[in-house]
Image (cartoon, rainbow, N blue to C red):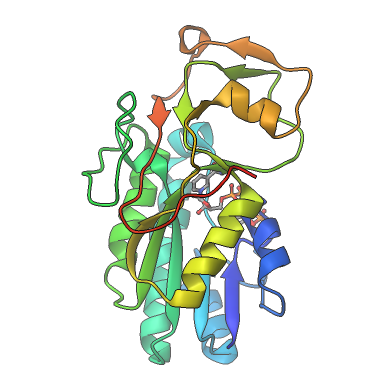
Length: 240
Ligand SMILES: NC(=O)c1ccc[n+]([C@@H]2O[C@H](COP(=O)([O-])OP(=O)(O)OC[C@H]3O[C@@H](n4cnc5c(N)ncnc54)[C@H](OP(=O)(O)O)[C@@H]3O)[C@@H](O)[C@H]2O)c1
């Protein structure tokens, strides 16, 4: 089984490298997803049996401030991959990584796979559009999740009033591997068993010197306040 994974240098990509041994992880410069020729060249020559598409522009602020780049990467980039797979025409299995942020984020709603998305910011909108793009391709699984890596928290503070059923990225990679083995299609939420705040998440991820903050102190694009998901289709995972 030949597996191609985009976004191999990213947070999730690094975790996927530990699970998908022998997979091909083209770099950004080898396969720029915004460039249809580059995507066709790699996909039509490698001929994957499965493709896990994680490459994206993920910074909420960056997407809001550079909508063109966000659209080209997250929507057109995904379209380029789907077009190449259609041309390859070998029924390659596709996994697309989406986000809990496609939902409005009402408190303790625990959104399931069949709930109605309502994105709050441009990043989430482009990820939702990416979902619609991959739905043009039959043999697809859309995964919605939320995670951090076990590395140093990027910020000096973390929200005590923003919540999610978060996982560490290694656990999401395991969830993706579990789904890949069964070749599930449609939409599946990969979720943690417990709803926790971002502050609790930062501590669990191993950060020590981190201050608490609340959404009152935040200035920037609208955020999904409660990213808690449930699942009607899959098992739940322990956070780490
Ligand atoms: N992080 C989260 O909390 C979260 C939650 C839910 C879902 N997701 C989804 O999970 C996926 C992975 O997220 P992440 O946090 O691992 O992202 P990340 O760390 O920011 O990594 C993004 C990856 O995409 C690559 N990339 C960006 N533009 C590209 C382009 N034009 N062509 C080819 N590669 C490109 C980057 O390569 P370079 O670094 O070389 O540019 C990098 O490998 C994304 O689809 C994201 O929407 C993330």
